[in-house]
Image 1 (cartoon, one colour):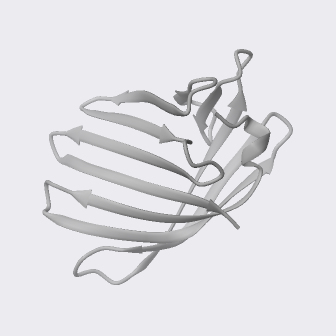
Image 2 (cartoon, rainbow, N blue to C red):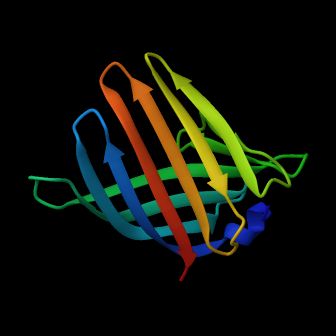
Length: 138
């Protein structure tokens, strides 16, 4: 697994969102930037989201990435609340986030570093989708 410092820089993102509940597929293309923020890295992404039968829209989000003592990475919301962790030394790492009534399962795959993949499986009363994001350095 790469270390926190290995993520610093800009990454191209190609994301596919398979929504089983709606029976649709959304596409997202954008750029993620990992920038030092004094405590770790600030992850910020911006891109264009295309959903069926809707006008394309700009989508953005931010997270804080922090190194853990064991070599893993803690991912926080941009306000500092815990989100999930990426296990140390794992070429494939899994974790989850419980946000009742929904659950979020994440898998990071670093086997083709510096290209990597993040897969979210989201389930809840009104959600049932898989989001597959492929990252490549710019």
